[in-house]
Amino acid sequence: MFPNEASWFYDKILQINPGEVFPMLNLGSSTGYYRTIIQPYIDNLLFKPLREQGRKVIHCDIKEAEGVDIIGDLSSTAFVEKLQCFEFRSVICSHLLEHVENPASVASSIMQIIPADGYLFVSCPYRYPHHPDPVDTMFRPSPEKLSSYFPGMKIIDSCVISGGRYGKFGKSAKSIVRELMRLAIPFYKPTRWLWHFREAKGTCLVLKKDS
Image (tube, rainbow, N blue to C red):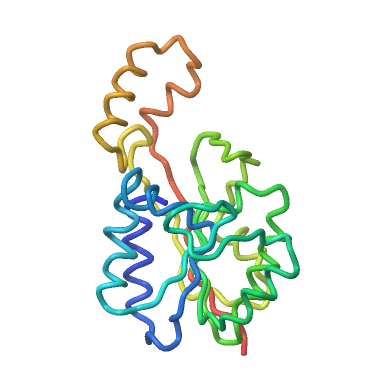
């Protein structure tokens, strides 16, 4: 998730009646350490303000770690049925679909979790280098392409948002040191090195499920 993306989603969430959005499920949440230390703007710009307002967000990921409330695999029918029992009003899913082999299947699972008139806040990279976690299929959809993976949901808002210069956004002090060291050796993986000077972009959507 990019800093601008976290702010964009937060603004869109505030425009909707809280009763229509919460409780919210954060799918592919990663760990609490990732959200607060590695990319602290995710928590500072999005989830922390929601917590301070008393809004309930449940974090879900395939890996067991601190800050993950529910652990499971969306390819499991039983797990999707388990998530349905929580009666979430909305799902936020940021930069997950490029890390699965079959994004259409995962999108279908996500739609099953969202109730009628529920919301989906979803994003993917639009322009971003290869970043396996553990895979990256290079799924880089436009807003129109991404929305096509969620038939029966209407677009409330969409954008291709700037993530800033790839080598700069959301960096911790430790990451900045590593970047400076990396810039000193442009001959090592030069294609990847060039990304330090390119603007990253993301596709962001707010979708609402038909009643």
